[in-house]
Length: 236
Image (tube, rainbow, N blue to C red; front, side, top):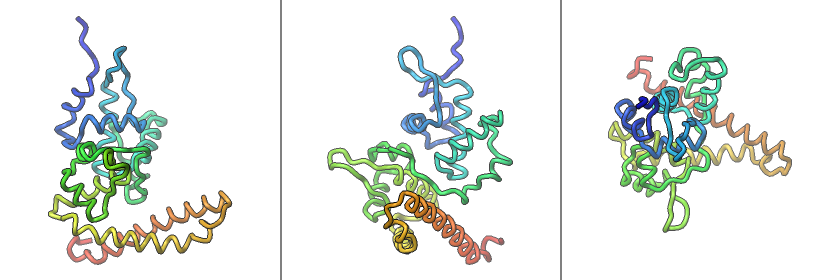
């Protein structure tokens, strides 16, 4: 009997779980739905993960965990690697220098709708923590009461705050970020409002680009000011 040269989705989960404890079958399926991985299928419809598929999955998980890159940026980086005949498991070096995480705006996964159970499994944030974050307005469930779901924006927020929780930060401490974001968004909207009011598609696209530029510059400024305040502690 021939030796099978591929793994099932369950076997892949077990093989990468040690390195990526937060991985779930739901998350693997989600990455497939977003077009980041594309395993073959058996005639019965079961996924077949070959070595190259597992290597690609590990590269994606590394970029999410170590660099907080949004999925669109990860997909673009993988395309660059493939175009250059590189290997997905060799991400680093020039690629890291070309797209530093703090230079990219995190974009939420498109069309994502997850129940609280699925979101908890995908992000590793406890359901009670998610509910507490929602009570402070940091994430928002949508839809009818019988079928509430969380979306891509919530996925991004939960993926970030999970690391803050490791330092004893509580959801109530994070409300200051919500207030900052609301004030900043209002400020930026007043800047681009003349363009947003126009019906000209070019003007609206320009407004969108302006908002992205403003958000990027704002993040850099906040990072610089925070580093200056913490300089005596971080030795920079």
